[in-house]
Length: 326
Image (cartoon, rainbow, N blue to C red; front, side, top):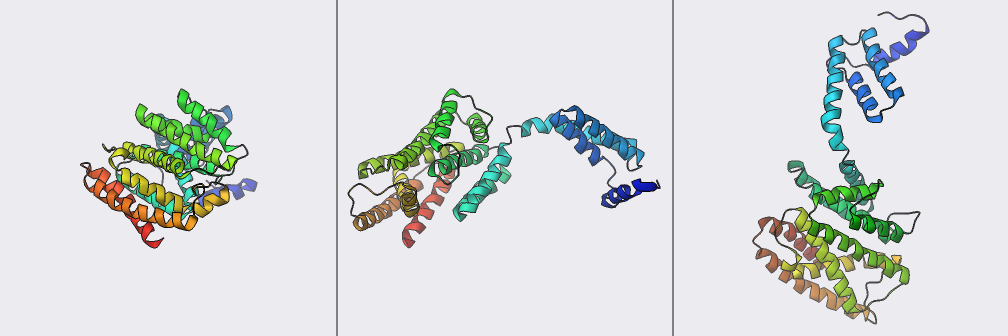
């Protein structure tokens, strides 16, 4: 219709922005009703009704288009919206992966390794996505890579209490862990709690400026990476566990220590054994790691689980490459 007076200006702007020929269903009506449904406020309901009425009075839509928009919103909000309230975990995982990747390219590689298989088996790999993001988030918090107004130990202590009780608060990290725990069996949940406790120990070491013996460090790193590998294997549906590849656990521990050695020292986390001659310790550790990589390759080849062979083989190759250039 022709509009005169002052109203012609906003009307002309709206008509210029409006797309042509997308009549059924009315996406304006679908969006307005979806927003009103989600927020459940009287003002939103009034706004949604005004949108629906205006599209008809402005001759932009027929009544059937408006009814189609109402139907689209009803189906979406009834069937899809409740599932997306679980509780925004997928978007949270994507956001966290972006943050991780911005700090180092290796996290982008991990992101691709997790999400590319997920495209074909989205539901199957939910525990992998949420598990990686939750564990890395906690690790970043305890390492000081993620700024926090509170002492990280306080935050993680509260989270450990929630995990132990099985009740979670509405904060983003506990909500993500809640989604992860819904995917894990009781054994995997215990492993995740134990892994968080191991990371918790590293934060205590930083605060105390602790210097451990070689035996203490070796035991701690083996525990940490055995739990990590167990969770990876459990969430990917593999039948083997870390005990089947002990040499890989040792190789992972060596790679992690030396890859982050300088960065950890700057943060106050000392992974150099007490009283060690650093050059000699470095050479001996590298030689031991090379033997562990060789043994790990043999252990992985002997596994009956083809999926585990493929996943763990990627780690073994990556560590071997690191050993060649360091």
